[in-house]
Length: 113
Length: 111
Image (cartoon, rainbow over all chains, first blue to last red; front, side):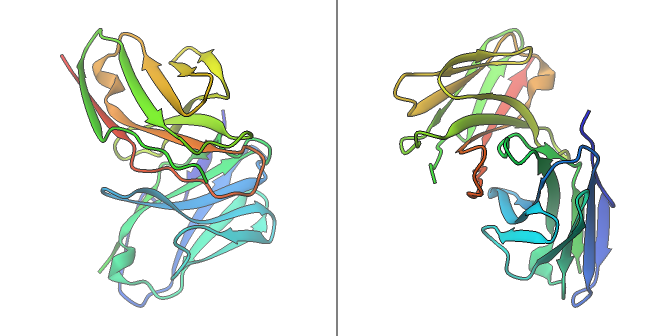
């Protein structure tokens, strides 16, 4: 079974803090994705990566950056957390030729106070 | 990008067959149709994918008419544990094009 592991289930941070959300997958998938999910808005793509050190902006990249130094790990960075970044963050991975079949982690619920 | 439209919510009862329809009028030739299920406090889970006609697996069936402008996810004999949000996605599998999940359909199953 594919496993996508997110480092934290719950996280509480202060406004202005730098926040790192980590995601690791164990199936050698080329693609990795970061989404945020808010009530009534569904899942929105923040960034995705199709290879090490490669990244593409999603629909809502503002206020976020990402890092992919190793194939199995994809990090989401909030340079200076703000209250409007309070959300559920979901990481996913997929094979490059099966982009629409994604495997998701359990999510990180981030609260920025 | 093909936009999808689904009902916001649906209700049904245990033991019934549930059909959730997704409209995607602007679907492109190379687009596949993919459905996910999401339980509260969990990430979405892939259910089924199809290109045309009918696809069936151990969880669900997917019906796609010849014009491919809509698709129907069919859940046979639902149980309380099928209460979840169901998302329909349309897009190419191998391109770098963006993926849009939309707001999904909230399915509630009652005893």
